[in-house]
Every structure is written in C-alpha cells, then in structure tokens.
Length: 189
Image (cartoon, rainbow, N blue to C red; front, side):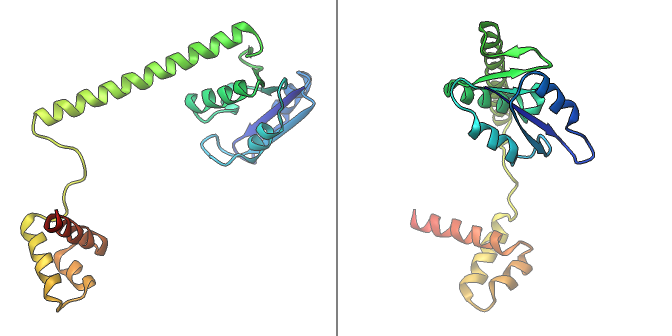
C-alpha cells in the first residue's frame, strides 16, 4: 500500500499541489502537517510512521517534506527500512524499493557520516591548536579568586542573605551557589 505524507510550513500555503501529486502516484491514504520543517512535533508524520506496515511504501512529494535535516531524513528512512517499509520521493525519483534507490541512500548516508567525521576532526584540531597557544574553551569565570574568596567569607559570616551577597559581588544567586559548591568540593577532595 502506498501511504502519502505532505507538509507545508504555514497555513498561508496550500497542501493541494502535494496532495494531488500523491493521489496521482496512487497513495491510498495521505497524512499531512502544517508545521515548519524545523519543528520537532509533526503529528501527521508521527501518525503516518505509526500507520505504515511491512510491505507499505511511504511517499513524499519532495525529500525536504520528510526530514528537517539530512541526518533526520537518513534516520527516518533507515527506520522505515528496518521495518521493511519502502520510501519514495516523487520529485527526486527516489524509490528505496529498487536497488538503485537503496544504493542512493547508502551513498547519502556515507557522505553524511564523512561530513560529520570531518567536522569532528576539524574541531579537535582547532581545540588542540588553541590549547597549544594557552587558550582554553568554556565560559569565562564570573569571579576572580579574590572576589570568590570574599563571597565565601561573606557567606560563612552569616550576616547577609545569599541574595545580598550575590548583589554585592555582582553575580547571580545560582552563580554564588556554584562557587560555594566548588569550595565544598575543594575542602572535601
């Protein structure tokens, strides 16, 4: 059975173009969403994925209708494949029920993995280079050691509230608690 899925980004747009194409392709049932591709909650897609059974084919008008990103698209198609459900994109003429379509998605997946590995390698090289120059990542400390010691001293005196100490030092209450926890770890450790 061919099951269609159509998505538009805003209610100003129309599902007619996609719906008509899916009906012409032979889809017996079409699930729809009106949601941005970046939106994680796509109820129509969830319903379509729950509806399809082994031997069915999920059909979309274009690849970008199914996935928010290449990675998302590949994961969805891999999930379908593991459930023995085919996938077809009309505009790109892709069909994972054919050997050519399966090959295309395997190449797609390999390229995506290659890209992720390159990004990881570049990031690691950049961090190593920065460390060699004495630079370390992360957020700069809100307090230098003198202010941190003053905050701890004021807290230990118990003459001021946490809110007052934080305001005097110029940090937030959670920030003050962070420094106090650090001190506790230093003493305990």
